[in-house]
Image 1: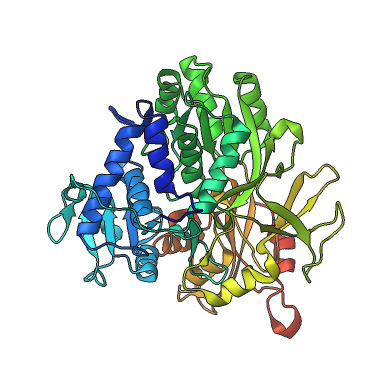
Image 2 (image 1 turned 180 degrees about the vertical axis):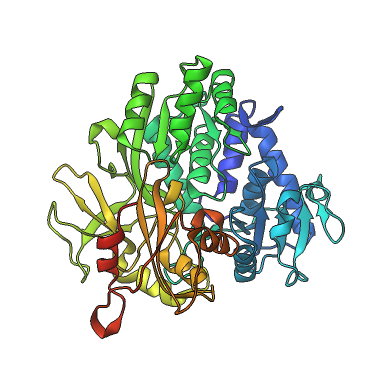
Length: 501
């Protein structure tokens, strides 16, 4: 073990000693203490090592939240391997791309997602199932061995997780997050929310999201528990809050509103809930304040690439802002030449500190651009006021992004899928306001001469090629798109004309 490093493996074993008898994980009718969690991860690490897994190998998982999922993080940390959580909302083509990109040594898949897997290219991958898939699949339970293996000699700046984010150019990029970055993020969250051994994280966000991993690690850091849930079911969630003492939750629209509706229907005051963080509109946050006066909604700004939130504050402290920079980050706003801008001026948000990711997997050119001049360039615009609060102002022209329900959707990715339709000549995809999801995908399309196509047909076509949450909610057909310099499409003019829902 490295002299000056502190990895997730160290954290798990520290908790086993300090909080051994406290509950760490709840899943269905199972309760796992911190000591038992350390034992589970050690047994899984032994099985993976026996299967030939070593430092730097990728361990991909395509599954809903569950105990084996969380065990995999700990086992990878012990061996120096890298977990690749695959978004099960992706299309089969997108899943195949992620698998090809990381070339996993091990692939763990729940039976319900077998249909998303590629039909070839897995010959060198050890395959394990969380269900009953036939050979060459083996049950993941076979990997848990009653033996010990020594931990890898790791620097905590080495990679622990690769999370694929949507890509400006239309293909996802794998953001490599380190032990140091994820632990630094969780430590700041733990301190801000004053988490203790009595806190229970409602783990309803899928573990392929950095927010879900961060909430779990912050609670784990405090010696608390995470309740692992496989899906968002508001009535069931209300029951868990009331019966299991759920105290913190991450949400994206329309989750919080649905939770408050369910609580009202069931006559619950959600008495144990005290921390809610994510994205939502002021009206829903006001409902939370009225329904749960003991709960605080926290505003934040962060990315997968920053391992979590780099700014944070209670919403009511400065409504509309994204909070103030957390303790271990330097957050600044710069112009196009990376020169710091004065207070109140709008520019690109840049970050440096231990939470910044190691770079995009196998994307050296993108890394050189994103991590230039000693900063991580977020591609987002914002300003910092006189009291240090960060105000998000939208995406930079180089990084257009749409966020329906908190998911990342890049227009280029959707445009590429739309233009695969033989009837399409041109398209511009943009984000528009949406009451339910916060933002929705809209496509402004030009058909080829003599072709006809309905909006419904195009939406279904796109939904069969990329994740269904990325397909357009709105489609508009126009005779032509406005042109700018060099006869290129004037995207700003299209947005001005079609930016409403």
